[in-house]
Image 1 (tube, rainbow, N blue to C red):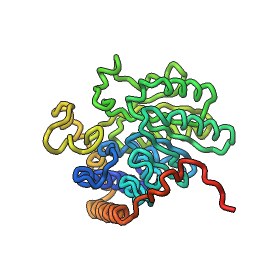
Image 2: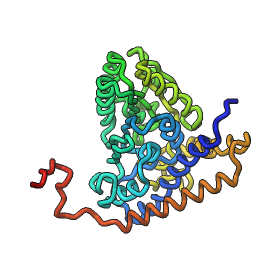
Image 3: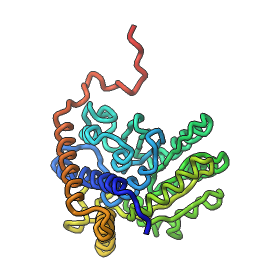
Image 4: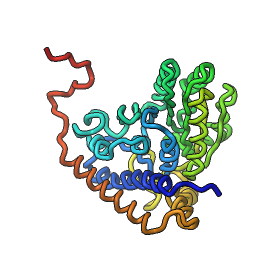
Length: 331
């Protein structure tokens, strides 16, 4: 069994716990109307963002999609700014103009998320091309869902990235549903990772609920890209614990989801955080006291983030067009 430094395992666990507590803390504000924008919760998929971003440098770039709170936090984005953006406040990462699905923090390499399916894949491709031309040793990760595999821009990007040997990792988070469409109704076979093969791209299928498997696969892919041996395509098998958008059809309460109850219960047993906890405790990597401290710290951070968001101002109506058009420099 491979041994990892305890500080690394602690950080990995903390990253996942911060995501889970942040996401679950949004349930009540969404249901009581405090949060009005659409919110796609990442609960259940934390191992992917945490495992991948653990191998990235701050100068590396990532691009997300409609379900990108986890990507934002894992890359180093501020939870205060994330919460404020979800509440559409001026102190948010997009100054309250974007809401849950439009997240960005260039200072830590989070170059944006967007709700358009496959909408940021071509942007990630462009960033990878720029990194290749500049020879700045950056790697780009494009996070997208299984639904994006039905969009032509993905295949165009795969072809171009392979042709130019760009430093980009295509990270498909396959949670088996495109909105509410089961994958068996979208694809003849559930083998998404094989779409990279016609373009001669190294491709792998990974257990997306095992954070250490994700980390190892991500580390190898990122190292290859940094050496000029990219691109790499990774498919992560996972499952969302909440509804496609919003928490109302949640896995732990009344069954109102279109997904089979038995399927949901089966995946709940594969909770990536619980699996990692069992690994850490059974192998004496970290003890329960350390895990409790991490949990308490995450709870406090989430409370602080919501307080920061609620006490922040909404954007001024007079500045509705600010950040939409280029601002002229004052003389």
